[in-house]
Image (cartoon, rainbow, N blue to C red; front, side, top):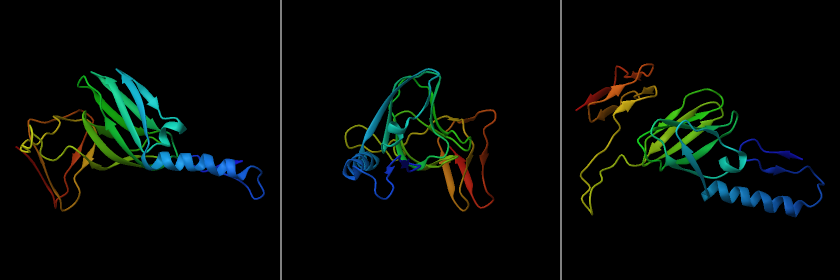
Length: 185
């Protein structure tokens, strides 16, 4: 029997026996891909490569205490979309990467990032938490991190703003096209 690349669905050949059982297991995997959550507990220095049953889920919830760094890796060749929910505490850095070695994404604590993998790199689709927050119904505070740890390119003809101070780590680069502006206030 063969399996699909990204979600590991059973791909039965013509004439396969017990086709109904195979189809039922596929529906469980498909259901997980549309709304199930896998929870992973991390600690300082954790480097977890997601298993098939973990990356078959739509949401990856990360918990634990990390004061330094931790990372999760989506295996090489696996493409798809996920919500990565960083519920870690401790002020550490969480990186999501691909086993293919391409671009990675840093997900700040208390943030949910919608990410995409093309099988060799990770991209941010959008991030929650960028809007105003506050106590009760007071939505007047905008929050951002203070350290750039991963290369970032501001899209062409787009402006970006950051509340400073901000530090760009050694080896990290912020690219600002000539048609864009980055303002730190």
